[in-house]
Length: 491
Image 1 (tube, rainbow, N blue to C red):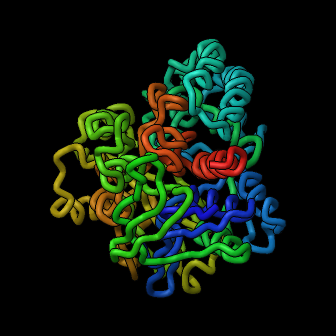
Image 2 (image 1 turned 180 degrees about the vertical axis):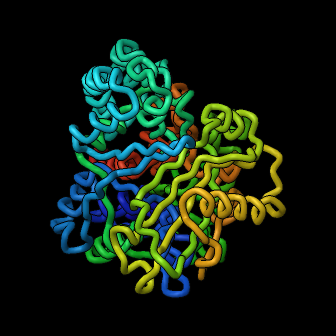
Image 3 (image 1 turned 30 degrees about the horizontal axis):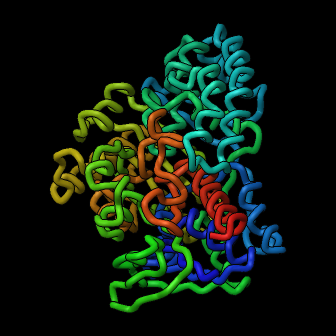
């Protein structure tokens, strides 16, 4: 079959590599000048910055793709395990050193509250069952209501209606520990106070398989998939933006795409790695959308957006680890501002990324490469980023300088930032969301936009906005689901 993949994020690359290895003729169409989608790489002044995802878990999902093509992962990219996984820093100055060393974890917990050690033991035990159920679903399609019905009893038994925070509160008395073991939904666009407790399994996933980094940056993993795809006969067109998915008026089947250039490319199936809402609203005419109408799409809730500053310093800050999670004192109130009120708060929680802690080659000698990420509301609020971006950036710099990076602004030699307008205008993301449809219970599994379109035959979706969701394990698994759908059932 001739298959077109729109977009080259990790979901699109996963699907394209699998489908090409399975004997199809696959073409990737990428709007930007290089592969990667939200994992785009910025290079400036001798520094290299990963634009998007930086946390690799479940490395076996990556290895599966290379094995399917008869190749070795190690021939394309080197993955190394990080320790610590994260330092979690609280406003009172305490730090939780988080990794997969059980004794270290217990000692860290004991440092915060000795009584919570027993709580963690119960937490870890109960997570085992959630992990079992959750990971059984990660690479299974939910195309019919019966797929959902089959798992409802287990989801009820596991109290999936509870949020991740409520789940953590059952085991930990110390509020800081509750946050340390429930912040993970933020990594996939979810609010820990509303995301289903199924997402607590991320802790178990990290404990079983670790947190990894691709030497050369996450962009090196993008390049590895791109090289694998080309080595197996795939075709890539860059700076190739799709204007419309073409659909046969008589059969309702997708049969090609029309490019912004006016060129028409024919295909037997289309895989969209573009934002799901954007795809339906902008690439598919209304007359073909009986289920995913404009009203339905706009009624769904979407993940927050991000403000990310990429900067290079002409000195190293050895006191900071590869991954730093900085949690605001006003944790719940801040998340309400981001997800519910959609206002730009005076404070922030931050993810600070220092990849040169692991791979110094990403910066000139004696320098550090960084990015600092602040969750912010998507464009459904009333924030004018053309006016707010610069003062917000300076506020973040000032905070980092005061708390963690002395004299920071004196040592910055290069910088670049992205905001919700970038997600909307460059990444074609509805409302400038950063992670697709928000991962709530009522927008998970069968209730999430399906991997196979319910409106257009031969149209499939991969990436953060479809099942199973955001994060590298999720988007790579979406590529596996679609690859299996197309090859197993001969669409």
